[in-house]
Length: 68
Image (cartoon, rainbow, N blue to C red):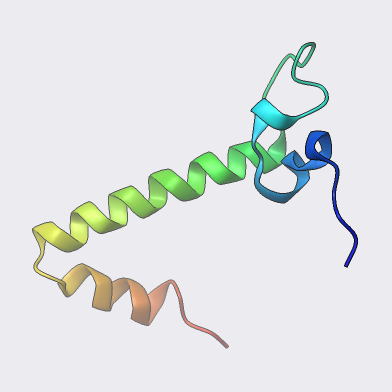
């Protein structure tokens, strides 16, 4: 498997600190936005799951994460 250079690793996970464009970039890239959105969604889902005693996780698993 080919090794990816450190300054190209933003393509994998949206880490702007490792991006080669970090010094002159004017806005976050799509990959970074997706990373942030996924982290926030996960935190909200975990919090709702704790507040509902696990019922929220069952609902989400049945509706959102359904594999067709």
